[in-house]
Image (cartoon, one colour):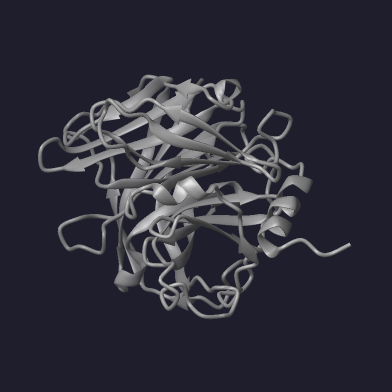
Length: 342
């Protein structure tokens, strides 16, 4: 029998896995060990609502946060993240094609206290060349599946596959996931911004969920894709108040959490977190959901782009949010942590 093309082998390997990483503990391990080290310090954020001591925001409890001040601007532009080793480690991608890894210093409850061992390395293509050399480096989302890491690239509307664990910063891309031809019709700089792995035991198991960043207006829904080996199914997500989707992650109960961001001169800055029932994500569905958080410039936010979910030793669901500073002196790279109570 002839071998499958590499993009189909990637999807087939993805489907063969059955472990759901959000609810299954990830063994402590080292990764990106030969990444270039970067000096880093942090500036604590004690309260989320500026000038107010409240820590409860509906179903969310603010655990703390800090501003990340790194000596190399290549580690800015954080656009996708995963939490590892019980929240003690993170792996992120930047929008200029770099891996960024670091140790998160935290309390037993998951409250972040600082950042150390920051390091980075370029994402490489299958030929060993950097994604910047291939003009495929506008990487925006990152998710971890049993079959490896998946990274979406916005301008060329691609989803890259890398092996896990990512032991070395010299790891080459394994291949690309087959995507529908019409996905390429999305605007070049507003393509797939959110990427998540379907939960084990659900109808979405073994599939990638991808959602576009924006739509022409609030009257137009956001485009969603269920990517599997046999075919691609489509769904849509209602857009509200000129907010764009910037990341997504499944919760331990199987619901999908969307991070939404507003960042323009008319509306200024905004952040929303929206929960969508996992069972509602079906071909042809038009999804909306419940907003868990709605924050504006009165809160400690910036250009919020990256979202990760993990469970700590006590079984609490912890959310980690990161902002993309666009490597601008006028913006900040923030790390915020919340505990989800329901």
